[in-house]
Structure formats: C-alpha cells, structure tokens
Length: 354
Image (cartoon, rainbow, N blue to C red):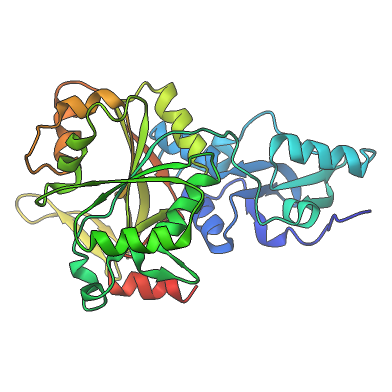
C-alpha cells in the first residue's frame, strides 16, 4: 500500500525567507499546522504551529524569517524506508505529514496523516484529566433577540450546541469533569444537558447576582484543588490543549492567558511626525498585529483564595492583581483562525456558514 503523493503538498509550501506572520496566515488559509520549507525547490525543513508559537513566546518579531526559527532536528523518511516504518513513525510522533527526502534534498514523496489514518488530524500529544470551568451565566446581550429564547451556551453550531462543542474538545484531551457557572436560563441549560445523557461529570454553581467573569469562581473555594481550565461559553479554541498546559507548567505560571493573534490592515498610508510637524516616517498601508484575549485560561487553585467572596470581579482584574504582586502571568498565542468567537451576530453567522 502506498498512500504517498509527491505533488499533493504544493499548498503547504513556504520558502525559508518568508516571515513568521506569512507562515501563520498560510496555516490558517489551508487549516493545517505544518508546512514544508523550501529553498529553490530544495527541502530545507518543516515548520509547525508549535515552532511559531514558541518563537512568539520568546518575543520574536512576526517579521522574522522562517529560516531563523527552524528546528535543526526533524523527522523525515528516506527513499529506502518501508511504508510500515513511515506509518509507525508518523503514529509515534503524531506527524501531520512525512516527506521522503533523497540525498540531494529533493522531495520524492509525501505521506499525509489523513490519508493513512483516515482522520483529519493527529490526536493531542498528551492526555490529562483536569477540571474545566465554563462561564455560562451571561445574558448574551449581543446575540439578542435569539438569546431572549435560547441561552447563549445552547446556541447551535451545526448539529450541536456551543456547550457540546466545548465538551468535545476537552474530552478529546482526556477531560471529563465540567463545572458550569450559570444564572440566566439556568433551568433550561440543565434540562437540555440532562436530556442529552452526555458521558461527563457536569455540575453547576450559580451566582445569585452578576459577579463578573471571576467573581463567581469564589464559589469554588474548597471544591477545586488542582490546576484547572476556565473558558467562556461563546468561544472555541482549535489547538492542542496539552501544549498550552505544558507551557503553563514549564513556565510555572499562576495563570496562563490564551491569546489569539489578530491582524488588521489599514487601507491608508500612515504618517509619523515630530512635535513641530516635521515628517519622521511614512508607511504605506501598514498591517498591525495584536494579541487578543481569547477567553480561555489555565489557573492554579491557590488563586481562588485571592478572589473576594460575594463581590463583582472580572478575570482581567484578577490577572492585573496577580501581575502587580509579581506572580507569573503567561500568554500562549494561537493563530487568528484557531479562535472562534460567536459572541456577536457577525461572527456567529460566519462560523455557522463554515
């Protein structure tokens, strides 16, 4: 059996001189997280989303050429490797693709995960079973009038509700214990989830009054005693969560924020001047990139003791408090299209059409 294809990787090519930002954009455009790096049609290496994320964490500029962040050791196949050995290597190391390279650094063939294993993408690198807090108590004001009838966590995306999509993504990583912060239409949420008979441990904690995105977490003091995830109920993150957890633990973070890279193009030339109006620089149609708070976090359980009881507190206020006292606040970047936000009609409709 030979499921390799020497031509089918053309859409996954990037040259070594292209930038990190161009690499991210290409990954988003083809919905893949691994690209083949070439130089004058010769194989140079492989660049993964993880390589780019590590570079961004190290504060590398998005203009940095791909060649500067390439790993020196990568796994590829040789012309005399058997199909079975290539398949096993791809399985052992969860490789999206494996090129076959000859001694002249020419690509003779490419094997793809989806062709060999009949799955869209490899499973997460590691499994873990940690509590997941889902913040689902909001009114969903930006999605009115539908939220007058259906609470935001139950809004459908395809055949499933938002809550079920969140469950699915965490369950794939080994998490099966969910605590849901509820308030608005809590009974409807409970009724629906019971009717689905889902194979998870699902518990609720209810705020008697709006307490902000962190205030209600004070209700979990003594309930959670291990590292835990927090996610808004209106966002989905397409990422190997075990990589975020590894970063969180390796960095010894008190809290890790998952940040989406958001790109904005300004369709005009911009001008910078001195304080007496003299030109400093002129830039034609610049592009700006920001790290946006996605609404997903990893927290250590001791932080629950820093949340005042029965008081309104946003999680951003908690983060600021931790940062000011010298705690470790990490930021893990994901690409723009790895973050799906249904909190507004325009974004909801866009995702629904995918």
